[in-house]
Image 1 (cartoon, one colour):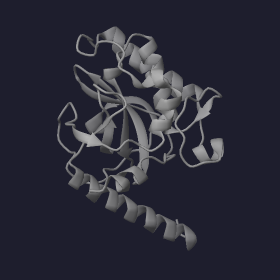
Image 2 (cartoon, helix red, strand yellow):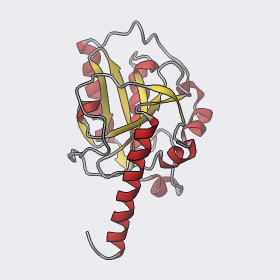
Image 3 (spheres, helix red, strand yellow):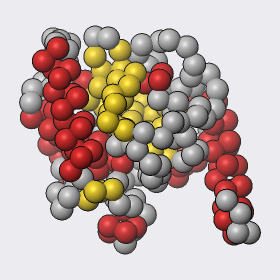
Image 4 (cartoon, one colour):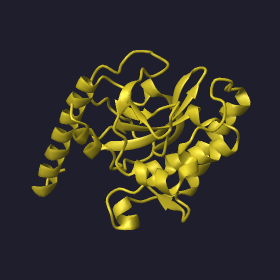
Length: 223
């Protein structure tokens, strides 16, 4: 699959209500696997690289991921940071915020979209001693068939998802999302695939079809 196709899809954040129940988009991500299977080198969301250029310290390896243990105290930090950021940051689109469709940055003015929430959670957790290799920015297709960003916490008990759409931290298999790509744990400026590219292509085609159908309904006055 062409990397340009995937890069275009990643990422425009959807704004579903908090605690919306996702439905699965695409196939082949069911089951009970605790950790994602990653492979290859994937294209990052296009706004990721300007973010790294502006914030180089956020895109380097920090801490020892191999030696890190997700103790109950660490898991409590995960819960606290996820809830704090969700409670204090106001959700707005990049177009509303910056006048352009896709910008990655920290919501220092108290407002941001999905990746801004995730970036802030990541920064706060790293400041608390979490290694960067355990906190990975991740691109998914959400319950509306739209691009979305979450933070994946890689723990001893599996991959957990911190999401601005809900305060509950869930195992990645329990989100209902289709996982596309995420940061490499070893090289934060690189991204890897979290599903086979052929399956990603199918999921993107289905998502594009769903977006087109919704647009047509809105244009005709339907809901």
